[in-house]
Image 1 (cartoon, rainbow, N blue to C red):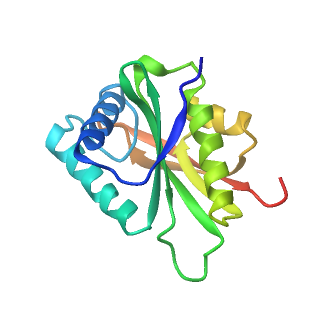
Image 2: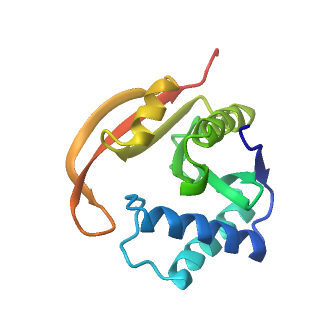
Amino acid sequence: MTPPVRRLSVVDDATIDALTDVLLDCVEGGASVSFMHPLTRERAAAFWRKVARGVEAGERVVLVADDDHGVCGTVQLIFDLPENQPHRADVAKMLVHRRARRRGVGAALMRAAEATARECGKTLLVLDTVTDSPAARLYERLGWVRVGTIPGYALYPDGGLCDTTYYYRQLGGE
């Protein structure tokens, strides 16, 4: 059964701790999600504290999925964009703990992100991910449109270069 997804109105210390666990697991598993290995718990928690401030300011939305062990996945919508882009949001940090993968958590998070974006009046979503990754395959299965690939755009946590592919999703009229 796919875990339920909920929107956080506040990101408290206990949730920061749980989100830190998910981020650490993803980086330790080799995911290229902006952080290099080894990622300390302190740096990961500092990232989530910054995200919490963005939620409080209305600049972001954080969605989480929970399983029997707690938070097992998360995704963010970033609304803090230039004033000529009020109709769109960036999707960021779609993370699923390795214990919860291949159970529909990523798809549930993305569907919830799309629904939340619609509720907030957004009609366009944009994201990027490692080219040919499981996440890229998920986005394509969910109907996201591939825009293009930039070679050598980012690093894996161990330091090797990876390509990044950009996607978008129109939300109007669906």
